[in-house]
Length: 160
Image (cartoon, rainbow, N blue to C red; front, side, top):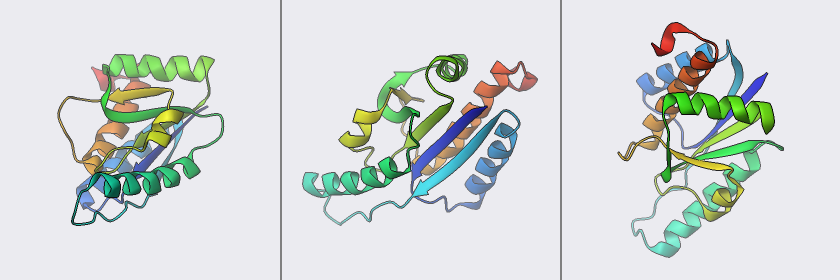
């Protein structure tokens, strides 16, 4: 069985996002086991100096790293990651679970992105768009795309 883990910085606050994520988690569970792990985001000081941002990223990074299961294939979501289609995401899930690991971890950073320590652990970096999305909305987009990818692999009509 495919084991998906989404590690995301910050807590979902808006009801519509929580409901949307829960709906796709329910749908995904037909095809795979999925866990969503939230790690707290660090409070942003009033000055966004490079040293303060690095401290925030380091703290969030350590929290993320502590939640990554052993032997997992790690995919980070990053602005400069590879742009792929839904079909390519389905193939990535399929190939990874066949040849690498049945554990796939997808990581969404906070408002400042991801620490270098997290990036060093990744097997692949993806970007879903050149557009900028709030990281809370990105979680909904990610679980929808995971469901779409699994639907493609299982020849469901959802993708059509």
